Length: 306
Image 1 (spheres, rainbow, N blue to C red):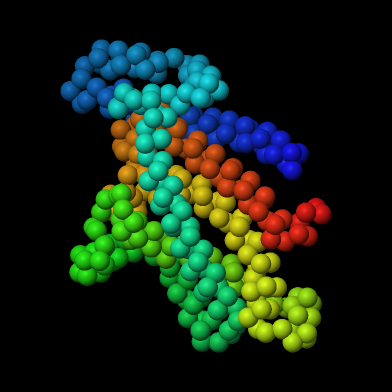
Image 2: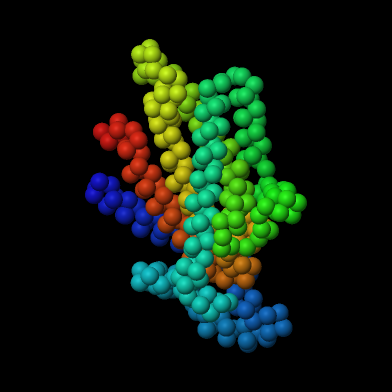
C-alpha cells in the first residue's frame, strides 16, 4: 500500500508539472492579449504596456513559467487578473457547488447505467436489449444543452416541480444532476452490458448455477461485482471531468461551479484562473484513479495478488 502511494505521488508530481507546462505554453500561444482585455479597446499602447509590465507578461516565457511553478510549490495559484483575488480563494468558493453536482451526477449515471446494463445483458439479443442499447447511444450523442433545456421546459417551466436555476437546496440539484446522469448513463450501460455478458459465461458462474442458486443471487453475488471493475476506473475519470465542471450544464442552470468560473476566465483571458482550474481538474483525476485502485481489490480479491 505504501509503495503504491509513493509511486502515485511521484506520478502525480510529474503529471501536474506536465499539465501545467503544456497549458501554460498553449495559453500564451493564443493571439488574445490579457493586458489588452483588461485595458479595454480604447486604451493607449502605453497603458497596455504598463499593465503587461505590472502583470509580468513582458518577461520571457521561461521566466514566467518558472515564477508560476515556484508559486505552486508554495501553494500559490496566483492572482486573478480581472477579479484581483487569489485564485485559490475563488476556486475554494466554487468548490462546494462543484462537489455537490459531481456527487449527484455520478451517482445517477452509475445507478442508471448499472440497472440498464444488467437488464440488457440478461436479455441479450432480445427487444429489451436492443431498445436499451439504442437509447444509450442516443443518450451519449445528445447535446448537453438540448437535454438541459428539455428538462427545464418540462419539469421547471411546465410542471413547476423544480426551480429554473440557482443553487442552495436539494431541489436545485435535481435537474442538473439528472441531465448529467442521463447523458453519462449510456456509457456505463454499454460497459456494464459488455462486462456482464463476459462474466456470465465464466466457469464460476456456471458452477454457481449448477449448485441451484437463484438467478438473483448468481447475478448480484457472483457476476455483478466482477462486472463493475471497469465502472470503478471510469468513475475515477469522471471525477476529474466533473471537477473541471460541465460548462454547458452549469451555464444553462446558473450553477456556480468551477466550470462556470473557468468559462468566465476564458472570456476574459484570465490565465491564472484557467491554470488553477486545469490543475485542480488534473489533481482530481489523479485522486479519482488512486481511489479506484484502492477500491478495486476490495471488490475483486484476485487483484491483490498482482
